[in-house]
Image (cartoon, rainbow, N blue to C red; front, top):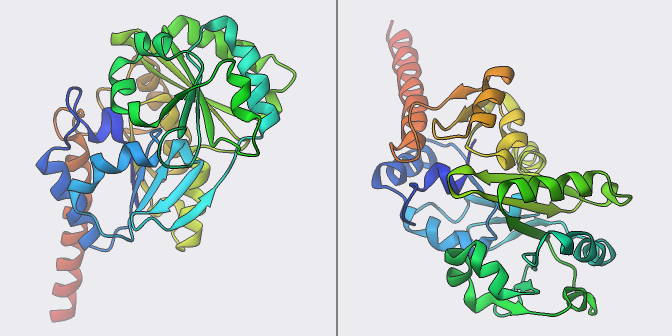
Length: 297
């Protein structure tokens, strides 16, 4: 099995189109019998249009919203974990002092798939994301009103300057409801942008990936994971063959050295994913040729 992050990994630094070499490598992996898992912090509706042009089969798996939702490309739901409404309400108040950039994601189509308190504040931080998701965004003030119904979100998210997001994370870590959620930080230092994903307890790319592998009878040592950012840590730790992109930030590169992760043979702008997968396929081909030769002897 190979599990691959999207942003900063499969996608180039600029643009929303996966390179042809990366596409070809994914198709070749699938054709060789490798289960392809796309593991992303994006929700599935936002991720699928990026992945669909690759041409993977309907049995491939999308692990979205950092592991809270897992579906086959066919749309078949494998699992979904929800964040308790009471916890979501408490998050609104706890994080409001850090700016009005909270977004809650619901696993539903159309308007209200994404609920935000102040769209203009969010737009100032992540304008491109807001424009791409405009059709799904609903403004609710105060944000707590989003949870007056029985619907529960799959995750919350806040964003802002890196230092502010780290401060918010520290405040949550010290809160009396820390045990009610899981949080994963992603950083883009060149843009001074931090994102704090707020998930149901026990949720991460790594835990979801472990369940997928177990369901398919795949051992951790048979899994390669490729990522670049902090929300990929659990996935890389789980994988027997972790590959960290060369474009990862200093914190991730230091972690790779400490934990023994392999640095991928290229960055997201150099088809690093394709290079990593091609190396695996080449080893498979060499092994098959060796076995065939032994059989001939």
